[in-house]
Image (cartoon, rainbow, N blue to C red; front, side, top):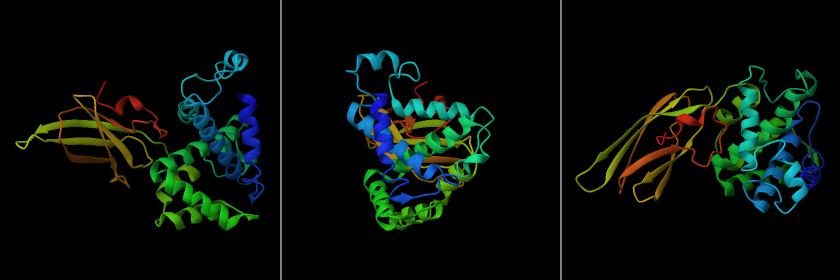
Length: 268
């Protein structure tokens, strides 16, 4: 419910802003974005993708149906952010609160967009590595002052690589993500296997690895990652499968903030 989500969010500030003490005037996203993320993940884990208690009849009629679709909490937040990004009034996350043009810009850049950024980070790293990195961040800086650099450095220490390609576009620019499938070829081999040649085009200005799902005639699927993404606007992913493919989808679980999902699948 709305009340439960509010309680979880405010409880989260014990950790983010309390134990991990950031300057909320200069970097509000470091506590509001984190508590928004953990609230969404908690509610979706407890109640399913819709993210609220269906047994609460009063709230079911009044909230959240008035504010966002009942089907999927994460996707509702994504569309909310995408509408803002496409409006021409988007602003970067990492800036002092008093510099935002209005309250809506503050709300989206302090709460919604950083929460979606962290969800994308979990998608890229996988649950185990993501939570290990967050635990390291907490253990290293608990009861101390934190900032963007200390957070990013802590994550990179666990991951073992620089993640500026991920964080900089989210935090310091308004570069947007928009991948699409440019071509799809399936070639039958003499061995009974099939070769898939998938053309991937980046129509945006932000770069991400993508989960690629191939669907076969019998309804089964194959999932693998495309990781040749850094500074690349076009690429061809070639791979072999042992069944006849009928469709391919990029980011099948819709975890990224892609501006146009219509070109992410060959089904259409």
